[in-house]
Length: 343
Ligand SMILES: [Zn+2]
View 1 (cartoon, rainbow, N blue to C red):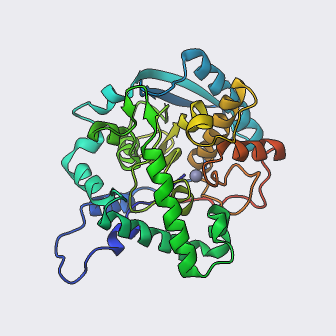
View 2 (cartoon, protein in one colour):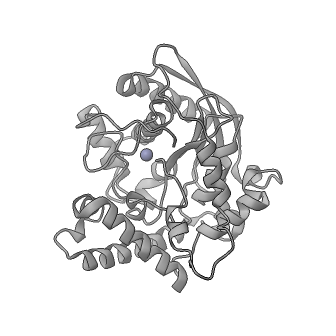
């Protein structure tokens, strides 16, 4: 996934009375100053550095499992993207300890203010209004057909009914995800847990990380923010991977890839998934990682509206069905992805 945060945040500002600059405006200025990216050439083997961060409360992936996953990603990158890559693990650490570091990017006052301004709790009145505005924006931007692929029950409804139905589905899915139980209680118990599961916290972390090109984690991102795209809304706010700009990184960007849907997915997210083997968990995780490698190296934009193509994100929480369709089709897309000048 790639997305340029803030569009809606700015849109929702009260215009007449508000003289204060939006707390995230500095990120827009940084974005505008970023250099234009070009696709990374495919003529040499590329080393991608991986940092593994683990939340000890949910199932993780041991060293052997990670080695097996890296081998799968390397194979698929060659087969589906034409990139020869080598993943090199540069560290494996505790996610909670990493995110408690006093110097971590999202603790800087400007970043913290921006995050506070754009994340929201959809169970409150204010948060519910933000969610409704987001659903409406995405319906209008994507059109009823793409929207109905992600919210199938809205097919044939009037725009108003489709938006209301999708909003109900988002809220109910989000409630279910937020209530996921871990061996130490609910997934989101306190602000520290929320940071570990917040896309915006991760986005600021990834924008400035220097030791890795990808961070692999067994967590996932489900704290809502006011710029979620339609496929994230359709998953109740869950983001499972993304790539963002990082001017200090060798490839001009860095990414995060999550394992929660794959290591715990059949029980937590999609009871119908029934992985055929333990290896299929890794296969499905590798497929998702390839989606992100395509963003990072090919500068590929998000694609919509077809199955069997790795550049289209999982539609809903059925990650295994998504993976199986791509594997069966051997990654077949109706057209090449758009090339982005920036993430
Ligand atoms: Zn994507």
